[in-house]
Length: 144
Image 1 (cartoon, rainbow, N blue to C red):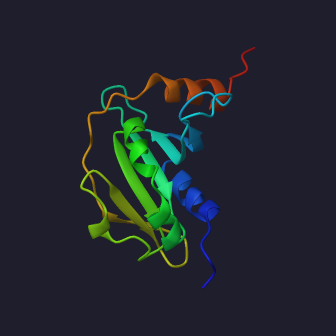
Image 2: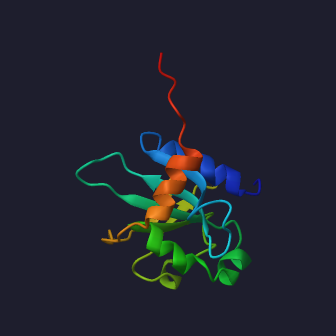
């Protein structure tokens, strides 16, 4: 079996969210101010006026990375729903608090499987991340 890398998992997430606003390596503020800035592996905004939902993803490709990560709890402030995504068995459901979900990749890296669901949190999304997505990551439509 080939080693699964972050890029492979990002492609699966991008495919899953092809109808949503998908931003890989999403910063939580302006790029010139790195102090306190976080980078979510993927940030998704569902396209809905009535039920907008921001989803944050943190990708882990090995156990050590998960065990050493102390910053992921800060990501909860930037999304309504948060998931870890990893190859099978790197993270166990029982290691995660109730406000965090878990997806496993298939062994052939073709599919994502929800291992642990989580509930929507009524979080007020900080303006800085929304500005970052609009200013730094949105494409400008050319109008004639």
